[in-house]
Image (cartoon, rainbow, N blue to C red; front, side, top):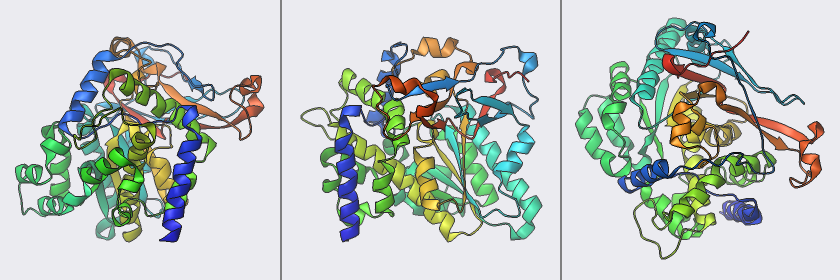
Amino acid sequence: MRVFCSAVSLFLAAVSSVTTCGWALSTREPSSKLVGRREMLSRSALVAGGLLSSSVVVASQSAPAAASDAPPSAGAFFSYKVLPDASANLSPTLDPIMPTDLNNALALVGADSKGGALWLGEHHSSAVDHKLQAEFVRNIHDVRMNVFGQNAPPMAIGLEQVQKQFQPALDAYVSGRISADEMKRQVDWEKRWSWSFEGYLPIFETARKLRIPLIALNVDSEDLGLVEAGGFPNLPRDRMKKYITDPSGFAEFARKRSYKTYVDYVVSPSYDMHKNLGILRTTITGQRLEEDMPFTRFFSGRILWDEGMASAAHTWTEANPGGLLIGLVGADHVKFEDGITGRYGRMAKGEKANISVIINPSLIDTRPSGSVSMAANDSSGADQITLQLRYLKEGVDPDSPEVRLPESTGGVLALADYIVMSSTQAVATSS
């Protein structure tokens, strides 16, 4: 108990020490009220060219747009491996990979594989994304069955869309005891998620047909709401332990230099946008606040969210040796490493695979919130997406001239391990 409390206190101290760097929380997701937030954000997106913190240098891969240069595909999508570059050139590239080869890589069927997690970053409103996710599940299942046969280690599908308290409903659906409509009702879908249930049906039906367990990953709204309303001290310790199983690692994660860059680029602009739009007066549960939600509470809510999902995935992979959990979560939780993927990697300690894929990334996905308008996003080519973020070495002042020196580079955060794009959005790459 003492260790847990000390670690959380350490985390809160770390948060307080960096508020001047613009740390904050990214866009909220579940509940019907929060869909309204997203719609407002989309309508109000502004172009603010060059919106970068002083500690971030963006390196993105530009490529010829000729369709004839695109790699071969197997079906409706193209796939690429992201090759980050932390050298003085800071020139990341995309390496085309055949979808069949990608499926083999994602299936974790190597002789030395110890299982792990595969994260498929989605756009919640995109039926195209969800169909591709279902296709990946089927293909990966087939690869594992072909290699391992009936002795194949287990597979599972982790769902951001469903909160942990509703796991029994998922179990009942996969086993055939209840219908999809009944599962929708029991998980309180319309209130707690609200994006189209029908869009996710291909995934659910595939899981049921193949008897692949569905695992609830998300934090219960009641608990997240307590944190947003009163910070971590407002959440009883026994409930916090459901989501934070590695308190010391949880606290130290926030102290990394790369994480500060991640928050500056991914999180802080989103918080500023929410504040400018005047929509920080409501918690995830709809509780009205007398004033804008302060940074520390908003940020703490996001951290609980990412940590809780990573923890649920890690718990399953630890309990199922050699098993593969395919996590279906928002691309915002996957991109640039230090969201859910970095947290799972910290817990796995390099002993399990931890692979990230972003489906149909667009310009707006890879730039700071509010820096790209919807019109610019729609008219841009996928070759303009940002592939990595540069972060500085410890001790380098982000306001000093040294920031541009190659020797000041501490490393880079890759957008993902792979990106997958529908044929109409494919990136053309040069040889």
